[in-house]
Length: 195
Image 1: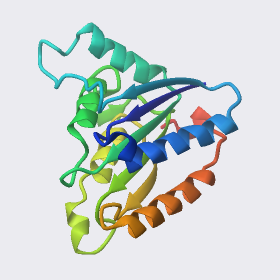
Image 2: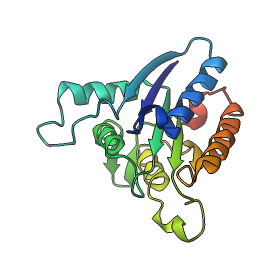
Image 3: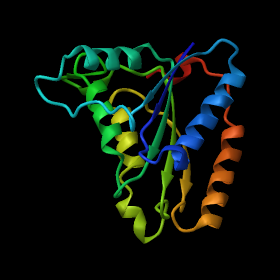
Image 4: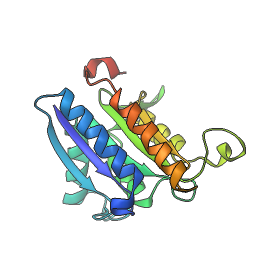
C-alpha cells in the first residue's frame, strides 16, 4: 500500500498542520506493516503555478502519477487568509486533470480518482467551525469540493482551531487533534471508498 504525504505550510517546524500530518502518517504506519511512503514538502519545493506551457511538463506528469499511484493521501494544510496555501492550490491544479482524475459526461462531472483514503490535517488561526467567522472559512470547504470533484467523497479531516489566539489555545487545539488522530482507524479497504 502506498501513502503520499504532502505538507504545504510555510512555517517549517513551527507549523501545527505539519505536526498533525506527521502524527497521522505515524498512526497509519503503526497500523500498516508494509506501507510505502512518498513525501513532498510543497512549502519548500512548490510546484510552478499552472500555465498552458507548463501543463504537461515532466514535473506535472510526475506529480499526477504520484497522486494516482497512492492508495492513501495525507495532506497538511494551514488556512491562510481564509483559504488554502497557494502551494497546495498549485498541487491541486496539477492533479485535477480532465480525462485523468475527472471527466465530463452528459450526466455531468464524474470523478475518476475515488478509492483513495484522504486524510487532511488542517490548522486554522481563529475559530471558523461555527459562529460569525464560519462564512469566511474557505479552506476545508475548498478542499472538500476539489476532492469530491475527482471522486473522493469521504475525506477525513482533523482540524486544529484557534492556534494563533495564544499559546494555551494552541496547546489545547494540538492536544485535542493528536487525541483524535490516535483514534483514527488504521484499516482501509479501497473498495469501501470507491464511488
